[in-house]
Amino acid sequence: MDTLKDFLFLNANVATDFNPFCEGEYLVIQTYPHDKKLVVKHRSFDYQEANSSCQFENLAHDYTSFSLRIFHDSRLWTVDSEGNPGSRSLQQDWKIAQEYKDADSDGNFESEIDICNCGYPYFSVLIDIDIYYWKSITCLVEDRGREIINCPNCNALIEDQGEDEDDFDEEESRPAACIGCENYHGQYYGGNMLVCAIHPHGVEGENCPDYCDRIL
Ligand SMILES: [Zn+2]
Image 1 (cartoon, protein in one colour):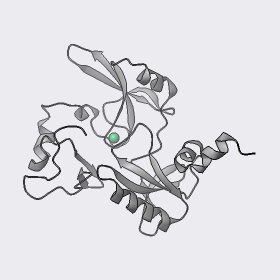
Image 2: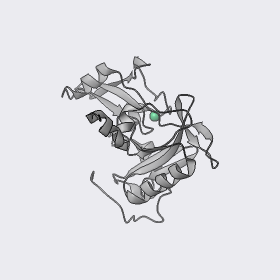
Image 3: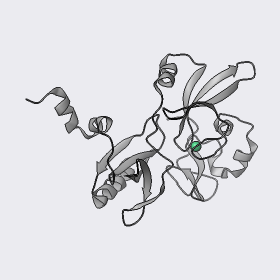
Image 4: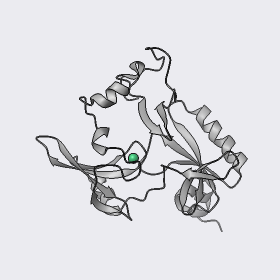
């Protein structure tokens, strides 16, 4: 007889939560915006099928980006044009240690799990409320409790990723059309800047049709 769990496995999204990834499996993952856990839209061992599914997801969602990855050597890799592993993916299936998950969900606003622009989760603790000083700590099952200044995954300065209005370096490199826009991303991937999910290469001129000054 089928149990409730058997039926759950028929739902691809639920199955993703239960089934570990397999060597050579293609995954269509959400690469923007980031979530605390890897968002997998589609799983397949067929490269063409996975590739089409990825393109479909990108067409179907305006404010979300999806990319194809392959599970190889216990990690996610980018996929080359022939469906083989390319380079190690910045996005991984990060496993957050339970004590940090608990601390994040206990409603205490002085500590929380944050996500680097590359998708790497880390734990922030408010050390001094007067100067609003936060300490960043690793919170993965395999690497926890270590104070960090740079992201261990992409090496970006973690302090630069807050809502710091005086961050001139970041603002100077931001295209004029993107200043004040909530959609702006501005991180480099393999030497190319992803300006935002809607216009990956930015827009011409100073006016963007999708300018947004509030979080949707
Ligand atoms: Zn990072």
